[in-house]
Length: 115
Length: 111
Image (tube, rainbow over all chains, first blue to last red):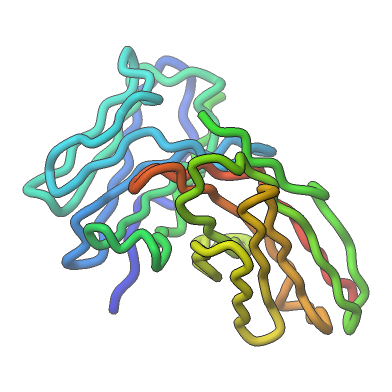
């Protein structure tokens, strides 16, 4: 089966600019996750969708970050305006509903550098 | 937010040698523990999902054990090869949907 697709792979922006990331999960996977991984730290969950509803966005900085999942399939994550501390790898993952026992399938991530 | 600790942060191992490293997690309300391998410029890849105390899982030269009572898991690499160079992440499943990740152990295998 095709993997989780993410784009772009790399992005460099200036602080206060906006940026958007795109994710296409594995077909049939009901649950989609966005993680932020800052250098030297473990990935941190930003938001989790089940189909097109939000399950958990407790760690999403909602004053600048937003995310949506279109028709329960693709998802976009947006940062507006970006800050220097947003420099990180943004990982998208998906899993079947209640198939967490088998692990998540991750995309290759978007490396964001804010200068 | 749960504290998942991995040690060491990094290690270097000679090709052919074996190595192991640790993941520590809260022992109460255990649900599952995941191990992922993340090679540079690639996607994190699921290695194991472990749910039972005393579980031992194996995939090729890589194996893992789980002790839920004391809150730790070991990952072992036998006869390390250069392709084993990666960051190994463990993640603790508190409830039925949220994973908390450790910062990872970065393994470098020297030829």
